[in-house]
Length: 100
Image: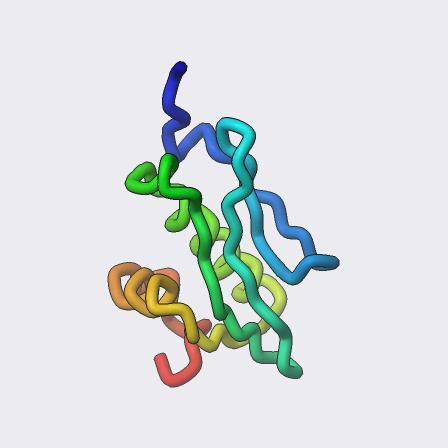
């Protein structure tokens, strides 16, 4: 079995489910959010344990930040992973993260 690299991961925005998602090796990976006006509150990221450490969560969060920037939304990182990702990627978080 070949492990998917982060560049092989296809992230899809599923607005009906309020999440960004990718299916990798048949397993669903997600970055959940809810909208509060123009605020996109990111409250959960989930990657199955067997897929951890491959950069999948980072790809999901990057897609969410890109979407927020395009749509003029402000991200509120309630999920600890999202908050850490924003601190590690200030160029992508600038102007998008609440208080950032």
